[in-house]
Image 1: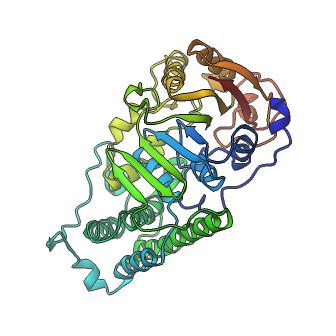
Image 2: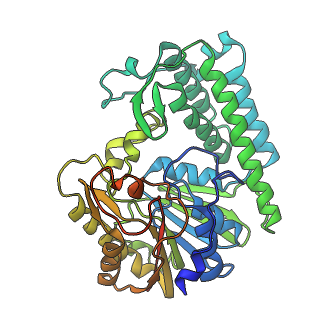
Image 3: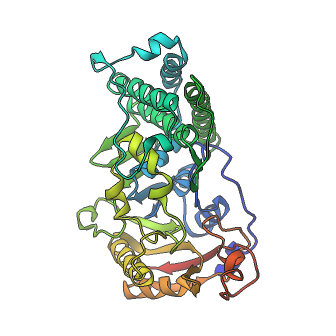
Amino acid sequence: MIQSKFEELKPRRHRHSSLAIHPYFGKVDPSIVAAALEHLSSPLQTILDPFCGSGTVIHDALLAQRSVIGFDSSPLACMIATAKVLGITASEEIQLAEIAKIVAGDGDLFDKILTHGRESSSHVPQMPRVRSVSDWFGENSLRELARIRDIIESFRDQVPPEVYIFARIAFSRIITQASYQKGESTYSRTVKEDSSERVRKLFKSSVGAVLKSARAFTQEMRDNELDPPCSGRLIISDGISTIKHGAVQATIVNRDARETHDQLKGKIAYDLIITSPPYLMSWDYGLYHKFRFYWLGFDLDSYEETEIGRHLRRRNDDVVRYRSDMASVFASMHPLANQSAQAVFVNAPSVVHGQLVDTNVMLRQCAELAGWRYIGSTDSVAIPGPHHGMYASLEARSAAAPGQAGKREHVLVFEA
């Protein structure tokens, strides 16, 4: 039965609606999310994603008229997920466009923007884990990034929180482009142009892309009979962002999914988990987003202490620690489940130091120890997995893997 719900799916790109509002790698395929929502939940129920990342599950759940809760220990991911499901009002469009106009305007004015009643110092943030900042940013890029950040911060108390987040998202989008970092998931240096006004032009274009995504989500809301976005829909308090859209809402919590959630009992309850957990030894989000954390004022060191499965820890306890981390996640999620709640985990085996580790089996064991009942799984959904090249690279690593060659996702289903 589980196999039949997911085996005929075709992959979908993260291009429709607001899914492309900000680059973020390792995203779960929307077709898997849609199938889980359709077959395992009903409108007005509550969905939980304990590893919400940039918010694919949050986005699709809201549009399917489900309320949704997302946890992620990355403040950057939570900011992206929040922006993805805000929609936008006409007045917010005008205010965001005004910020872009100031950035793109007269060069002398750009250099003299006042911040908090004083002339902008336009300082470059401290980057303690970057050996030489000049190796990663050109002089013009540093100056223009600092000025743009100052302009955005000068508007923080003058515009609604929705506009401030959109401006920060537009800024975050261009940081990798403005740096000498080669790509979104490649931490290597490559020389890029460093001409005057290049970064300002990138920001203007980025604001346009953010507006396009926000408008697309607003239209999707109308198409799916949701209330249009209204002022005051976003409330931020103690690391929790709540976005209300009529009868449904998204609650995005910047916290570690391994933590116990006793204080949330009675406040948060869910009917279905849909998530793609961190893959063992696959990605290192802190490394690839390092410059974004510094420019946006996020604590990189604190985040990396919470990043499960990242591949650059080098402590030789990767598998043992991953098993312990995932056991903690299943245990922390169980008390918040409504009766007969189910959980859908999108996963794939990993390669650790040249050896295949079947994390599907590991997740089953962790779930059952925490009181979850295993319902079933697919052997291999015919959807390319974005997280890693496990199957494709096994032969080169002299390791063996089940199934046919190609990157494939697996779906495991549990019941509370």
